[in-house]
Length: 384
Image (cartoon, rainbow, N blue to C red; front, side, top):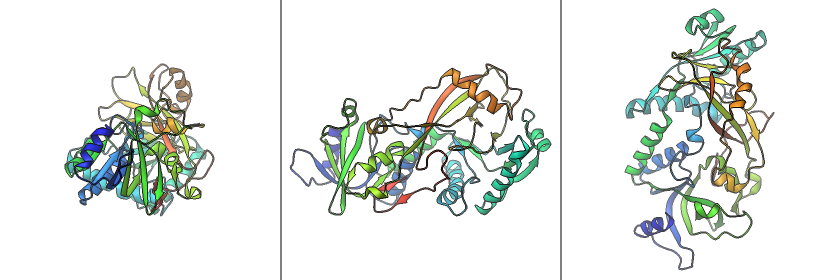
C-alpha cells in the first residue's frame, strides 16, 4: 500500500529528499477515515484542495464510526453555547438535509427521555430548559399516561418528547461522503499508520509505516518510517488514537495535549419478539459517562439496548493505533442490563437479550468529572 502510494504521489508531487526514507510534499493530510475524517476530506476536496487520507485499518469507518447507536441527536444534553451544543443543533439540520438530498436511509423517529421515579422528574425540566437555550424549542413535556399512550410497553411518570431525534444508516453515510471526496480527487490509503511525527520549521512531518509492521513492534525500539509526508495542513481525526498520536509528535507543547479516557459500552439486541415493542427511541436520565442504557432502533425495526459505561485503563499506543480493543460482549453481561431496562420496560422477559456489539467512546474527561467541551486546537495539529 505504501509503495503504491509513493509511486502515485511521485506522479503529482515532487520529492524533496534523496535519503533512504522517501519524503513527499503534500497539500492536506487527514489522519483517520472515520465519519469525521471522511467528512473533513470531502469538504477540503470540494474546496479544491489536494487531500490524502491515511488510516491504519483495512477499510473506512472501522472504529467508533461503526460502533455506535446510529442516532441523530437533537442537541438536548449539552451546555448552552458550547461547541457540542452548537455543532449538534446545526449538524442535525445539515445531516437531515444531506440524507434527503443524497438518498441516505434515515428516519425521524422521535425520542422519549423518561423519568421512572419522582426524584428524576426535576432532571427532565433541567434538560428541557437546557435544550431551549440550545435552540431546541420543539420539545414537549408529557405526563406518564401521555407517553404510555404513545408507547404502550413503556412505564414512566413523565417524559420529555423530542420529535426531531432520529436514526441513520451510518455505513451509507460513510459511502456517500467518501464517494464525493474521491470524485473530487481525495486519495485514501489504508493499512497505513501515522505513528509519530516531528516539527521541522513550520511543518509537521508525519512518519508513516505499514500497519502490519506495528503488529510485532514493542513500542520502545526505534521504528523507522517507510514514508514521511510533509503537508501544508494536517487534520488529526484519528478518533481513539488522536491523543496518543498527538503525544508522539515531537516539538508540540505537551502541556496543550489533554488526557485520554475511554468508556467502553456494550449493546444487546432484543430477541423472541415478532413485533418491536417500541416505535420511538427511549432514553433514561443520563448517567456518568453516557446517556444510560437506552432503546435504539435499526431502520429494519430491530431493537437494541445500550450502551452501558465501563471505564477502561492502561491502553498502550500500539493497541490504540491498531484498534486492538476488546469489543467482545459476554452473554452474562446482560444480567446488568435487565434491571436497568425494566425500569421503563417492565414486561421484558428473561432470556430476551442477545449479545450485540461493543463500542468505545474517546473522551478527554474521566469518571466523575464534569462534561468537557470539544477541544479544537488550531495550529497545534490536534483536533478532537
